[in-house]
Amino acid sequence: MSLNDLFGQIPGWGEYVPSFVQMLIIAFVPALLVVLAVLTPVGIMGVYAERRWSAFMQDRLGPNRVGLPIWFDGWQRDYTGKPWYIKLWGLGQGIADGVKLLGKEDFVPPGGDAFLFLSAPLVVFAGALGIFAALPMSDGLIAADVNVGVFYILAVGAVEIIGVLMAGWASNNKWSLLGAMREVAQVVAYEIPMAMTALCPVILVGSLQMTEIIAFQQGGLNMWGIDVVGPELAQWGLGWNLWRAFPVNVVAMVIFYICVLANLKRAPFDLPEAESELVSGFLTEYSGMRWSLFFLAEYGAMFALSGITATLFLGGWGSGPVFGALSLVPVETIDLGVGMLKWTTVAGIAEFSWKTVLLMLLMINIRWTLPRLRIDQVMSLCYKYFVPFAMGCILLNGLAAVMGS
Amino acid sequence: MQQDFLTILIFMLFGGAFVLLNMVAIGRLLRAKTKYTEQKSTTYECGEPTFGSAFVRFNIRFYVLALVFVIFDVEVVFLFPWAVVLKDMGMLALVEAAVFIVVLGVGLAYVWKKGDIDWIPLHDERQVGARAQLGDLDLAAPTPSSPSSVPEPVGAGSEG
Image 1 (cartoon, rainbow over the protein chains, first blue to last red):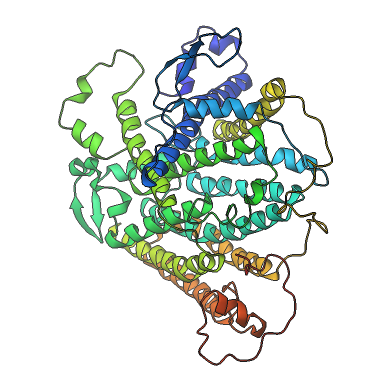
Image 2 (cartoon, each protein chain N blue to C red):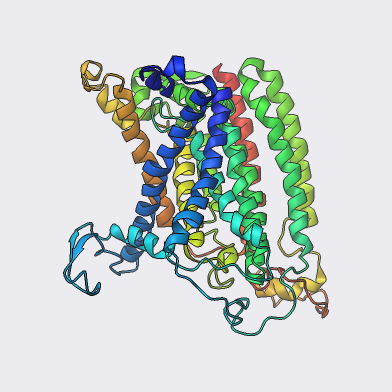
């Protein structure tokens, strides 16, 4: 099911709509859907999960009250009346915070560069949304299945640095500038092992395209030239790139995941923000909604890069326990009632979601477990450990690919 | 292909448009009217009056790290096309890439030995005090010479 076929159902689509407008609409609909149905809920749920989980780890309660208010007793006089609300166990906190932040002053520091300051969140947000464009969320649910997928993800993931440097430079604040420079040094350094370990699955698959990486992991597992697992067992998740060239790609995935953490500047790599030394890093002079858009972009990028990790190493939406369990029942014969909806799309969403959410929760857990690293430790971890190990991973994966083919 | 890259362009433009929509359209309607005051517009810095420009000179280390990054990033870019065709090319391509990676490994070893990827370089005598502070040096061991009083540019990392 592609959007092209879906829109083709509309009467007069082929005759009356010019082809360029068709292309624009087909491009615009997934962008709108991703922002409304993925990015915003992920932001709200991510902040909620982060706050609840940290509260649990620190023996506090966290936000557990705010629901969706429908009506206040005494609404006409003031807002202090008793609210009638839908209980959401605190999930409404994100919406309440969002509305509050929309009403805050949009402060621009004088003496800085107002244009760069105002457009920095634009660049950061565009970069985060760019990753979503090539994120395969299920069968057919990929906005742009480009043939340079992995390369594109790494390229667009680096756009965010420009926005952060703009924010830090334009703030006319030494904290901001220090935070931004640290961010650039850190993210740029971790780009190297990240790209190297992202190459490991690419070597085995022989393609940069996201759908081909997923399709490859649905096939049987060949370990160092010996066929170990057939395609029937592979759909349980035994054909994941994680198990190929066996011990090597486990190391590669750990390195890739830690580099993703560093690229997202989440603790223990949150030196660019480092609230105990740099106040709030490059965000010091930001306020209100403009500040929170950086966070929405961060949670969006967290979700997207967790999804990319799952796709590269954990089979993406294509294979795993959900598909394995469904292979036991005659699922192909079940009619979903909706003509164009395939059962693999539904199962794929479930498969993709549990992996991505698990990786995201692991990020949150790591943030509240480990203390912040020092800048010299960050640099030596990257260049003295990850780069040599990633080089070894590339060569060993190359050996496995040559032996397997 | 054309459709794919148009989709990507629209995605990124939409990301920017979403920010503008929030800030300019919805935000401006909901935002309170605020007044510009001299007090509010001062730079946030520890509560003290700030001195000097915020556009300060930077530690040379950031530039060295950027140079090291460029070298290794070019390596990775060269490896991408190799990774795609390796399965078709076989052993020969693997050996050639191994030579390529080993050459860059020698480069990494050189940079490492020279101390350029250490945040505080090993051979910089002015930095002995800072290294000891970070716990990298054993203070009981005899230090090469006394640290001189040359001021460090902002961003040296010793404040971290």
